[in-house]
Length: 248
Image (cartoon, rainbow, N blue to C red; front, side):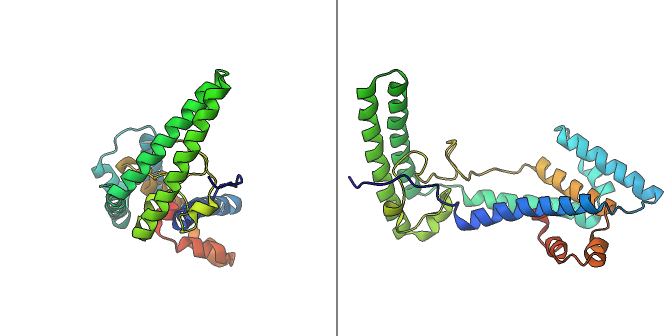
């Protein structure tokens, strides 16, 4: 068996990492800029009433209460209300990507599950002071994790598009560059293992409604465009041009 040194964790598969970082950074940057400048619009009586209704819906949605589409349609603009359906369609399309798990992925996942079983047994014996059995299962788990990496290289070489199924970067050099241990082994993104770095988190229709209503309230309360223009803030201008999904 090849000798390997413990390596730091590999970066998350690039496109997933960028998507996550962009969304988090955008939300935080916009919120920080608006909070720091505190540029709020002076609302008319009608606008204040709408703001109150939007805040009421936000509270209901955050409390897992049902908010009827009729109420949403009343207090959202036509474009904002249409965004709910658009975002829900995108969410369903995203989910469809990960239905019908390919056989190659299932085979790889089965090997990792077997290695995890051996590793967990080694932990059990170690905690109970049975060093001999602990070592035995550590060697077994290492052997199967190594076989999993070999299989992973075969899978990627046969179909590179299957990279989207893994929670971190996968390349042709995986076998030589990855440590053989339970933390370093790539996981399938649908895995429920706590060691899975990037899982599939499905947004519900409630999550989407909540995001749209929050964004509507933000646009009503703050002078977004004026802030970007008067302050000459090119960074905010760039953020405001991002897709709506990134601001939810």
